[in-house]
Length: 153
Image (cartoon, rainbow, N blue to C red):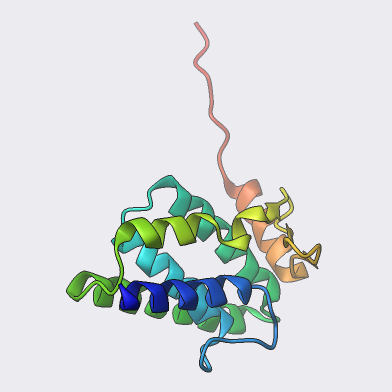
């Protein structure tokens, strides 16, 4: 029971610092924190809630990276932390999935709003705008996507 309480406190601290620029959990950066929560949620079969989380997390990572190279590095940190948390939880669960999923569902990230242009409004009202080169890349993908053609009878 004591392990569950310690874990829940850690998750609550983590969830309160997801959007904080300077606060991190024991030196872990924001990308790794986001990845750790995704890994735990994946290990506990969070389903569609995890899909929503990853969409918002990917927008946050993309919008807070200054360059494409920095974004790729951040995405790698996220993926590595996600895999590590998933693997560790599957090997020896420190808390039950019920507690993990409850904490996961109550994360502030789910109060974020993702707009069609890729910008994100965080729960604290901060707007994360899309980088110009990311907007340009998104427009190029849209223009290269073939439109569905209908057969004429």
